[in-house]
Length: 138
Length: 292
Ligand code: HEM
Image 1: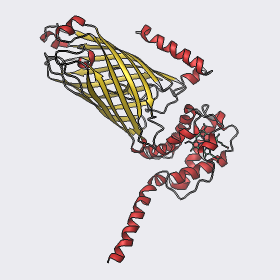
Image 2: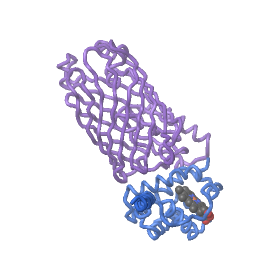
Image 3: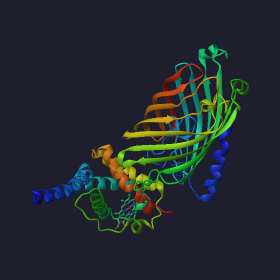
Image 4: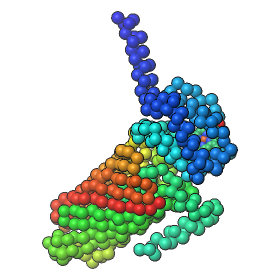
C-alpha cells in the first residue's frame, strides 16, 4: 500500500501547484491569446503619442515575438524567453515612469478588448510592475 | 482659499523648471495608473474615506505634478460635516493640502445651548512626504510604501471650544502611514499611526481634561472590483480628551467610481461615534473629487 501511495502523493504535490500556476496562462487565452494581446499592445504603443517616439526604430514583429514568449513563460505557459534581460534591453532608452505606465495602459486596453477578466489583468500587471526597476531610467 | 495654495504651485513650478526642461504637457501629464493614488480623505490628505495613506495624491509621476479639488459631505443623524479644499502632489514625493471644514450642529446646537445651526469650523493645512517603498512597482516584495505627514489644524470658535474643555483652538497631528497595493489580490491595504490631540478631528479643539497628544490608529482595506470601481472600508480610533461628552472610534464603508483620472465619486456610510451627548452619529458619506 505504502509503495503505491507515496508516488501518488508525490505526483499530487507536484501536479497541484503546477496546475494552479498556469491559471493566468489560461485566462490570457494561452499562447494564441497572448500573441494577439501583445500584437495589439504593440500596435497601440507604436502610435500612442506618449510612447511612439521610443519605438520609432523598433522592429515590431521581432518585439511582439519576444514579449509574447516572455509573458507566456511568466504566466506559467510552456514557452521560453530567449531575449535580452530587461535591464540590457532598455538601458539606453531612458524610459520614464509616465512612458512605462502608458505602455501598461496600452496592454490594459488590449486585454480589455480580448475579454481578459479584470482580476487576471491585475495578476499580469503584478508580474510586470517590478520590471519598472530595470526598464525605467534612474 | 485660493491665496492659500497658490504658493505651493509657485514653488512646484520653480522646482520643476530647475530640474528639467519640461513642457506643460509633461509636467501635468497624469502619468500614474488609474486608482493607484487613492482619493482624498476627510482632512484633505491623499488616502480614502477617513484614513490618510502613504500614497501621494494626484496623478503626477516622479516628474509630474498632480492636483485635485474635493468636496466632502457627511450627513449624520444630528450634524452635517462638509469639507472643501485642494491637494497637490509634487513629483510623487511631497503632498501639500489645504481644506476648509464646516460642522453644522443643526437643531442639536439649540439643545446644547449653542443656538440652532451653530457651526464649528476649522482649516487644515497638511504636508506629507514619501519616505521609501513604492506601492505600485514593488509587487514582488512585502515592502509597503511608507510616508510621514503632518496636519496643522485651526478651529475657528476658540472661546466655545475652550468653554467645553479643549485646551487649545489649534493643534498638530503627526502621522506615519504604510500602504500596499496587492495587485495579485486586487487589494489595497493601508495602516497608519497618528499622534494627535484633536477632538472630533479638531473641530472641537485640541486636548482637554482627559489628556492631550495620544497615539491613534487608522487603516483601510479596499478591493479593486473592476476598472474604475472600488469598494472599501476604514477604521479610525480617536482620542477621548473632553470631559463633558464621550468621543469614540469611527469607521466608514464606501464604493468609489472613477470613470477616468480626472473625476471620482465616493459614496458610502460613515459612523463617527458618539458626538456631544447626541449618541452615535451615522450617515451618508459623499466625496466628489476632480483634478489630474
Ligand atoms: C513591463 C514592461 C516591459 C516589458 C515586459 C518589455 C519587454 C521587452 C522585450 C522582451 C524586449 C526585447 C529585448 C530583446 O531585444 O532581446 C524589449 C525591447 C524594447 N522595449 Fe520593452 N518592455 C517593457 C516596457 C517597455 C516600455 C515602457 C517601453 C517604451 C515606452 C519599451 C520599449 C522598448 C524598446 C524601444 C525596445 C527595443 C525594441 C527593438 O530593439 O526593436 N519597453 N522590451
